[in-house]
Length: 306
Image 1: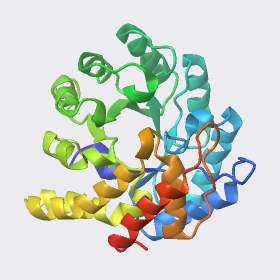
Image 2 (image 1 turned 90 degrees about the vertical axis):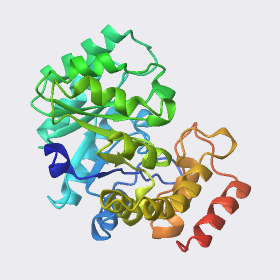
Image 3 (image 1 turned 120 degrees about the vertical axis):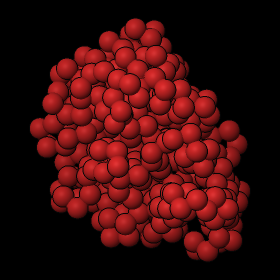
């Protein structure tokens, strides 16, 4: 088995960040949600302040406190991965160092956003972050948000840096890129981990060699994701598809009306299924409408989640 998968598993959950009605972080509820995810075995590892955790809308100190809360709540039962990517290299290094102080061993670092660096700029950014820490680094490619795609050649170069150990690819932008990343990294590091970052692309990317999934949907569909991986490993593609379709319908529904980040709809859906009050998304994300929630909740009822 791949060394990364052996340690962190196939399902990495980017934990949603709970807010109160004033959009302040509810750290106690965050710990409660983590307890739920662990007790129900919804995934294998927990990611703090990823995209689903609305990292770009959090202050530096909030991200550090969420890491502290997660480490304490998990209490060694599941690995905690810190999302430490920021717009600048300096801030990314500073946040990664905070994660390292907390004993977190793996940081997921998003490609720098807003600045649209060249591929050389992307390479230099990740190289500098990796060289600043003893943490392992998982690259995070999500061009739909950051404005630049990490090319396969760049990922291949970065795979040669000892503590850069994997990549999460938001595969919906380029459905075949998982294969491109595999071909680019297999000689530099045969154990380099390639994960899909888009729930709706789970089946196509498994076929291409994605070893796991970074899954916001696993707040609700963790057992189903696990069953899909199992069915595929056993060669039962029909069963994998049968399990996947209801989850696909739900995940597509969280993108209604052109929403790119699903949080506004995902949050009340998580509340409805878990009973944990994670609150509204932080501004400027607009709350879900009644019409949107009727569609999503109807799907959850149809598939037996409510």
